Length: 323
Figure 1 (tube, rainbow, N blue to C red):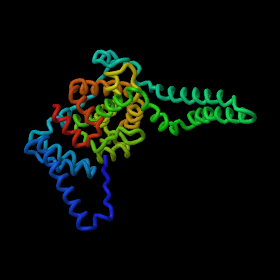
Figure 2: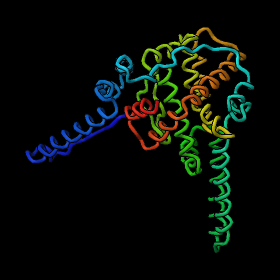
Figure 3: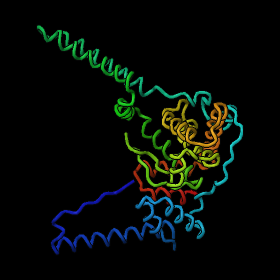
Figure 4: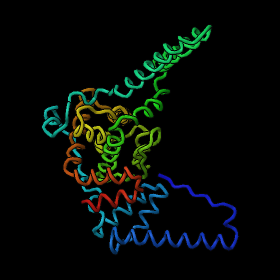
């Protein structure tokens, strides 16, 4: 998450410059007060600076140092991740609803969008048919063609409709709560496993939780991701799906998670079989769901912080305070 700031030309005047310096001092005092209340006697400015620079190594180093002084107790508190055979029954026993359907992409948003487009254009077309003269013919024809264009685009390049579908999904009453729950799960699980979070967004069409560090990115792009790192990243990738599965009968946001996991699998070495991929998915969901369930209060606290657009540092502070 980046914060861009611009200063107008009027700040070059002595009065404006003094005003700006006063504002800076106020912000600095506010930050020092917030930092001291979050962690008495602990300096968080190094962590804040590392996050602002989006330097994953510096973020890890800062959090490791905060762990040593007894503040970041939840950071990398679950470092040992070991894959094992996992059954659907284990997922159900843990509390995952409809575990057998977790890997099936949801069509709720797509269906609602298409139904609305077709229904609206159909209704408008019928009304437009009452127009006098040639208008009663051409207008319904043009309106009706909108549905055909949407269906054609959806068949040929469905990705072009994702922004519209995503925007439409925001009208569902559970949308904001779902996306907060989903993204907070990615954030929390990554933090518990020791993967630095550099930013996040709950806005449609923007990057969500950004957590992969440079070393891991190099391994992924080179296709050299080993089994140990694949397991860790798989758990983080499935965290959002797991969080929804624990709360709702139907998971809506799993498509992106499953795509991410498949991308990681394709970039791993050695390659794993289809059966191993299926087991990896189940195990990753189980492991992530266990972490979320065991840290329920922290997860819900983080959800609230992210819903009010807290900074990454404030989110980390919320995790540690709720621990």
